[in-house]
Length: 324
Picture 1: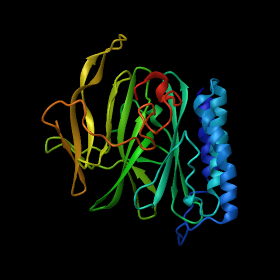
Picture 2: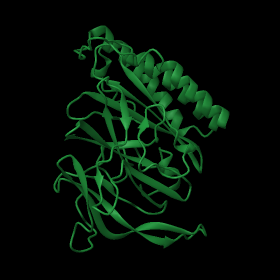
Picture 3: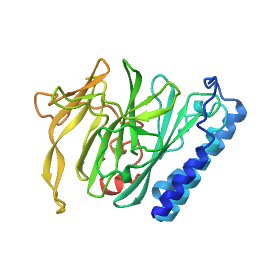
């Protein structure tokens, strides 16, 4: 299994090796030509089939093979001039998020290995006429404890399936929140908030000390909730309250004999943006509520859909937790 994972990572690196080189004068993407549009539509059909196989094929080796071909096919598609303008709406098993300023977009997807192992893949495409692409190489399986205070790079990425993005401005420039899901393990799942920013050379990095928990606690670079796979946990931006609202978790004895886990207690915490910092708010509502308003899922509104809008059961994250 490890050899297969390494092989796919190497495929990723090789496919992108010529794609993230700097352009002396980047030119923003423009309209797609009719020929480019036709070409991308054809490739998108192939990507849709491969993406479905990554998630749904019952044979592990076939899922890995589909992922490998998906990567090379996606890169081929994105090398089309002005491909940034093509939405890839027919690829149902990949999350594609673009911030309001349209400076880039980020692709992420999940590969189910076995009941306790998941791998994440992704790429950042900059809004340029010619392709400028950064592969995201998941190294989360090498991390023993969650890297709450680390700065991570595209080739040392804590992998996740992102389902929301928010841009915000700080004294050090513009940054972006990424809210995502990590299937983690069989009995426990994670939801995370990460931060992406770009340096003067346009190189991305993940993590920034913008999460403020008060004077007696150091600022954190990223946030996570780890909880029982049987629990339904909310973590997302709320447009009405203009905050990130999340379930407050409490310790709970695992019903599977796996020690202590965490479940929601019916109350909610939050992060509120203030002068470029996300300030932690404990117990944001006065009373415990069952029906606190939350934004719709990123692609769909119906309850039978999963975190990015697919039918429940189509994603690896649904193989264990039927309530995501």
